[in-house]
Length: 90
Image 1 (cartoon, one colour):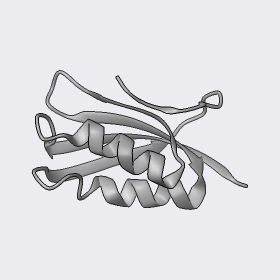
Image 2: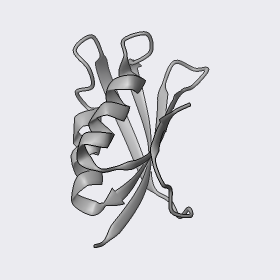
Image 3: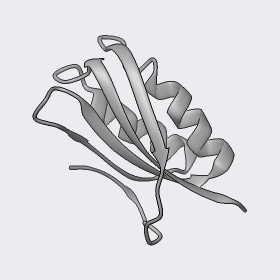
């Protein structure tokens, strides 16, 4: 299994719409580990770690988000961190 670790910054209407909880739910469904949190500037930051295909699927989902979200941008970069055991909302 090839593991990827990606840090994503999601912009748009992404706070106050259930984005973090929905991201955690989708991550658990896909078997992706990591975390998601709100940033003071109104964006959401997520760290995704798992099988390359699952991380890719979650990255694609971030462009949609939950029904009330209006995503305008998703920036992502590969990062190197120790293995994470679960997915959490921070």
